Image 1 (tube, helix red, strand yellow):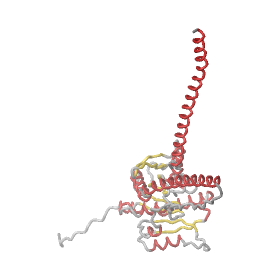
Image 2 (cartoon, helix red, strand yellow):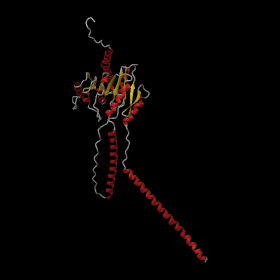
Image 3 (cartoon, one colour):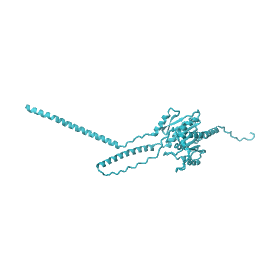
Length: 367
C-alpha cells in the first residue's frame, strides 16, 4: 500500500513541470498573437495616415517681411499707425514734417515687389521730403495676387512585367508617387482656394488708401500721391476715384511707372486717360531695339485724350532706378514739387482768399 501511494506521488511530481511548461507555452502563444494583432493594427493605422493627404501650412514671406520692417522702424522718428480696411489691419508709416505747419502730405504707393522702406527711390524720398515741410506716409501693400495655377495632368505609368520582385517594386513606387501627387495637389488646391476666396487687391488697396488719406487729412488736406514702379498702377487707380473737392488739392507723381501683373489691376494707360488731376511722369527712355511697346509714349497719348489740364513727362537716366541714382531722383522730385505743385497750390489758395467783388445792382438814375 505504501509503495502504491509513493508511486502516485512520484508520477504527480514528474507531471507538474510538464503542466507548467504547457501553460507557459499557451501564455506565450497568446501574447505573441496579441502582439501580432497590435503590430498589424499599428501598421494599418500608419498605412492609413500615409494615404491621407496632409495639407501643410506654407510660410508667408510677405507678411513676415512687413513684420520685420515694422520692428526695424520702431524707435525711429517714423510713427507706426495701425489702421483698418476691408476688415484687415495694416500699417501706415508716417514721418512728420520738420515744420510745425506742413505744406501738405505725400502718400507713397510702394512697389509690391519691394517693401515700405525700400532703400532705392522710396526711403530717400520719404525721409528727404520731410525736411522740406511735407509730411510723408507709406502704407503697407498686400501681396500680389497672380493668375490661377493650371491643374496638373496625371503622370503616365508604363509598368513592365519583369518578375514578381520588379512588379512589387513598381507597384510600391507608383503608390508613393500617387500619394505624393495627392499631397501636392491638395496643397495647391488649398492655396488656390485661399486665393479665390480672398478679396481682390484693387478693393483692398483702394480701401487702405482711403483710410490713409482720412488719417493724413487731420494735419492737412493737401495731398501728393506718388506711385513707384508697379505701385504707380494703384496710385493712378486711386486718383481716378477722387471726388471733385479732393481733386483740387491733389497731385500725382509717377516714378518709373509699371503695369501691375495683379489679377485685379486695371490697365494703366486706360486709367491715365480718365485722370483729371495734375500728373508728373518721371520715366526712362524707351529702348528702340526692344520689341515691346513704348510705354511712356503710350501713356502720353492716353493723357492727350483725357481731361488732364497738366500732364508733364520728365526723362530720367537709367541710373535713376538704382542706388547711385537716389540723389538725382530726390532732387528732381523735390524740384517738381517746389516749382510746380507747391507754387500752384499756393497760388490757388491765395486766389480763393481774395475777397469777391461786390455784385453790381441796377439803380435808377438820381437814386
